[in-house]
Length: 296
Image 1: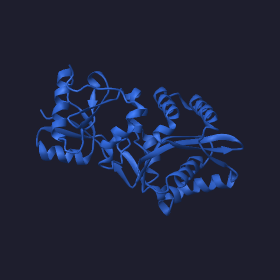
Image 2: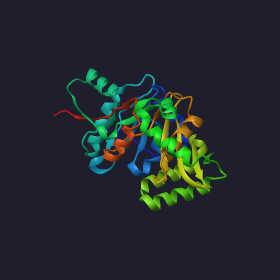
Image 3: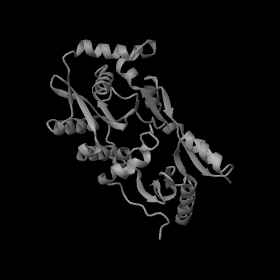
Image 4: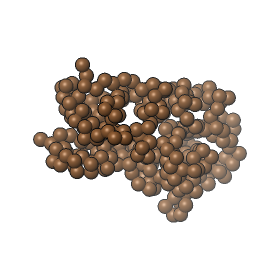
């Protein structure tokens, strides 16, 4: 019998699981039921609660890993670490925790000095921006982005912004299918988007499209990580239309998330082009992540 018994994420568990994250007001996308639910098939992610601690296991085979234990009120973080160690040992897998925050690293070093090694996982650091910066694009550091946006507004000033609703969902899905056909089919992302549409209201998703001459040329979807932080899950636009990405980004944040202080636009996965694009938006800071292994 497993030391910890895991189960898949189901939509009815959102409120319960988010309680473990809400206690700490996390700004990371992976500390959110929405992300874990949408991407569970891609990353083989499952969850369990044992002794008041939320455990999240992902991967498979020798790539099996845990996120740090999320201890509820009165529960023990170090006990959670011990259960992870014992569970992986029972499975015959090496000890691996991924996505440990600097706070988690500090606590492990404080409570269990010399027992673990820590390696920076820069490719999975999440980019955190000031919401108002992305809405207003202020100052010299945003000059290039603002030039792109102004070019779009001059050429396509009669564009139409629409929230995603039941009235345009099917047309939005068709636009997405066309985008994937043109730019490459990522099956895991398509599956996550399909889950988002199927559970739209329960997840609290918000979305929008931009039409040019009646045709959907850009779309985006996001949700609240908490009252301070918005999370952009998906964003697609016609790359041949200059300034369109800047337009959908600005409009969506201004209309749906203007009350937030920050917006999380996820990681760059170590892809040079994606890293450059994310850095050009001048992040306020990063949600840093570290891998944790047992010391020899």
